[in-house]
Image 1: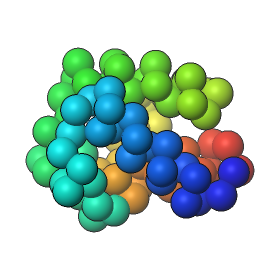
Image 2 (image 1 turned 30 degrees about the vertical axis):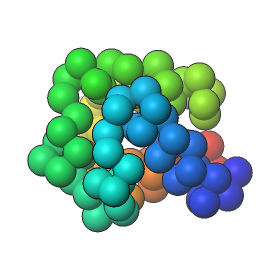
Image 3 (image 1 turned 135 degrees about the horizontal axis):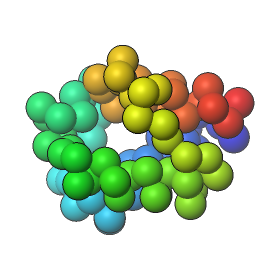
Image 4 (image 1 turned 90 degrees about the horizontal axis):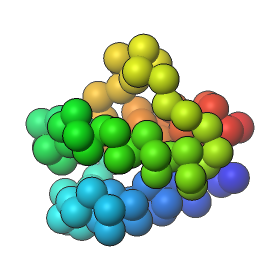
Length: 80
């Protein structure tokens, strides 16, 4: 899967399912501080990533992930 396809899928579920404003979704956006993703949103994201990309996010793997770009890098590394 191409990086742009990963970014598009992530963007789509953040807008539609997590209800984040589209203009906030930029690569350098920080997940908690800029996008407002909290622990309840994270539970939804785990389900969405499993559905869209076919793997489960492990909490300990998310420790170094701060930005949307980091998150897409993580997904790319898991499926690539």
